[in-house]
Amino acid sequence: MTPYGSMCDDFAVSVHLATKMELPGRREPVLHFFESLQKGFPKMTDFERRENGDYALEEERESGSYRWVTLESRRLCLGYVNPPGLDEADDTAERILDVAPAHLDISPIDVEALDVMFTFDFMYAGNHDEVVAEALAVGNPLENLIQLPGSKVLNFEPAVMLALEENCRLQCRLNIETRTNAYQIRTGQFPEAPISVYFTVRQYWGKQSFKTYVDSFKNQRRIAQELVDSHIVPNVIQPLSQAISAK
Image (cartoon, rainbow, N blue to C red; front, side, top):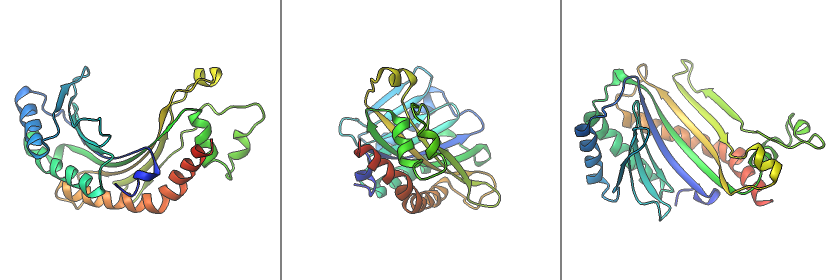
């Protein structure tokens, strides 16, 4: 189990490689790419073409721990949900990023950015925005506003983006996604759904020192873990977990 598995209901590491031009969508290169992935990851057996035209290859989800890859028109996405360890997630990402350029004709001149994202999901049947506000707004200047008599929090999804270098080519973003709507608050009927905390490290391509996507991934993954351990876990993940547990 990763060091984050016990902090939330589901934890995932994902990678998104965005391109400026459309990726191949023809039958032959698509099938060859996914067949090459199956050779390295034999449990990835669920292949489909979705209604929006995206292609997806996944492992079975029943165990709760699985790999997935999607090929969109201008983005290659991959991830590992509830990986046994970060090493396994790293190995998956590195192997796919290593073989993808040749199969999909991905040229460095065509790449827009590479994202490495950590996702923390908390299942909760209640007002998502209210519990996020209680976890993160108490003790700051917004506390009095969200505690106005007779008021109910309808939306509280904080987000912040930082440039990690002077040229702004390396960035990080924290954002929280809630799934409560006004109808649920009016009726008091809240289905169980995830509150998602996303932390992303993005490397814009073209003017960086990394020669391969694997090298860039390793650097971004290291930065992501350092920032998550030092800032996101103590200041976001733990307070949110405690607020949900107190309900």
